[in-house]
Image (tube, rainbow, N blue to C red; front, side, top):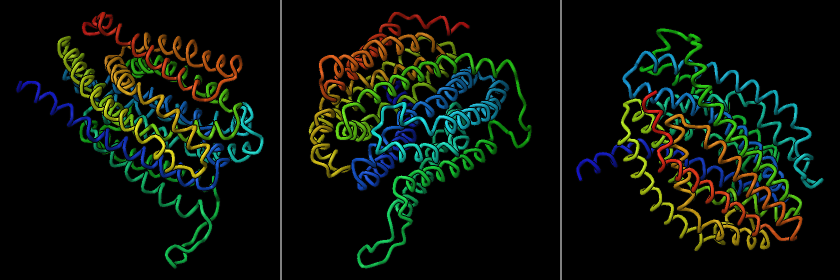
Length: 451
């Protein structure tokens, strides 16, 4: 019993900063959505239209970060401190390559993206300018995402949490100033730039720059890595090892996000109201994923350490324990989401039709919250051990075979609304969870312990 208490304590010690960070990100996402939502359904739809591409960009950076985390965590578990330092140095080179490449691509496609996504003509201009503005500082955004994983690999969960807090505070304060025009609040004249959706984009861009600078400083001064003593050196073997794990995750996230983009472009055909309901509901449900993503960070780090220690028993014990904790928490979240779906939508919009549709789809997805929690933890398990090719294949099958194809049929063949589209989303998550669970229980990953 004491052993389990110690393990739970260790898990929670790693998980709580990630949970707090995820919670802060969701709160800011809520505030962003509510502030833009106050401008009307068209503004919400304009921001939501390119959000899936934003997720793709974020996912690519996170995927490369996971590759570094997996290699670094395994080296730490094996007490190979020299390799930990060598691998962590590759984070800077990967950040520069990925950040510069993504920035160039996004600035090239920005003017055409809303049209490609089947956005309504009246929101295309706003959607394009929003996307272009937040793409300018992408190198700084990638710096935050990749180097956060490097720090987490050595169990430093607090630094990413604190930097996220500072970024979010900057974002909210600038939103308040840049989105709305000068107005009176409680009789006091408050300056405002009145830039609307573009103001929200500028606030986000500035927070990215601030976060990137802060993250690099903390990374450079880290006492484990000692870059301030040794400088940065390129090590081909460690660099390629990180890419070997990271690239399948990039492909998996790419498959998922391209599926989301196709998924959203199909929903966009249903009109501004249904698309706004879909976009806002996507934002609203994020709060109920907080426990899953918080414990996923702990799972990836601890499993990577266990693989480095060559302990099959520890991998299983950690995974079962974290899955159990997450399932309980996500079940509670699902109940709250089902009960308060309408009230949640009312935070973001005053449009009654959008609220009604959004509440229905949130209740649909609420029943699958525990399953999604297990899915998220198993993703962390396979990422931590570096077994990334099979999850990529599973994502390819379920995203395109169930979610995208199912959505196409629901909309174009049966002429059904967004509620049935969200059913396809639930079926996709359930199927992917089942495939990952089957692979874990069959023990197809065990050979990695002896590599």
